[in-house]
Image (cartoon, rainbow, N blue to C red; front, top):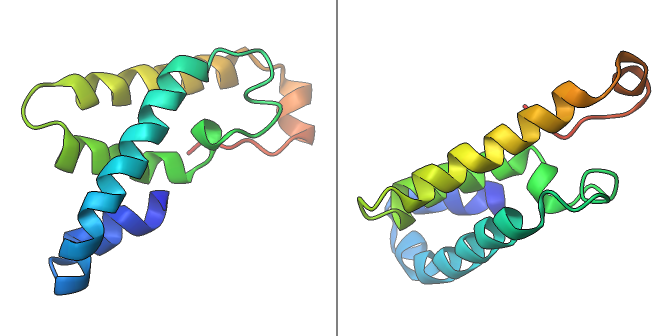
Length: 104
């Protein structure tokens, strides 16, 4: 969903117009979930969706299609990205060597 919604809705086809309301609900839910749960101790270790590379695409979608000029989704994107960056930077070099990171 994170990758698919952004690409599909950007096409502007009939199928994308029909999918957009569903994408809006799912992406909004995921963004709100991440804002509430990214700092849970086990979130990164359990590879929650918030830490997945696809989250970047979901955040792009949120800013493009859900923000509506309010800046709320732009702030959410900033907060989620900062949390990911801070957590990954806090990992030791040894941990980074032996563990796949869900960031980029």
